[in-house]
Image 1: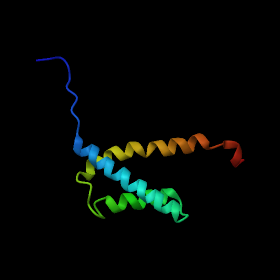
Image 2: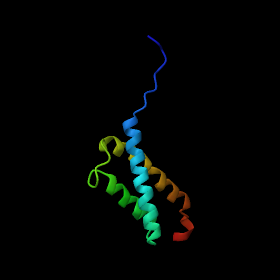
Image 3: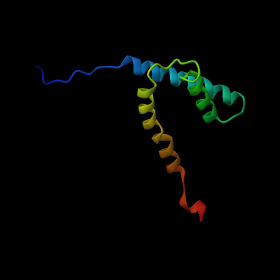
Amino acid sequence: PSSFQILVYDFGLLSNIGVLLVGAAFGGIASSMAQLPASLGYLIGGAVVGPSGLGLVSNWEQVGAVSQFGAVFPLFSMGLEFKPTDHQ
């Protein structure tokens, strides 16, 4: 037995994330063209390609676990822009 670990790619997960990113991008572009917030378009785009919409995502539990990590980054970036002196 080799001591090297074999990196295994989960192409199903990668394709599901790709579908969600493309759906969210189209939703963001469409909402920007309608002069609505892009974040609203991202949510609508994700809902359309998700299991409640077209059902293009096959393993929703796995994608949901990865998306929880993605929720941290916008919160962190908003925290960097927060100035405590603005609220005194």
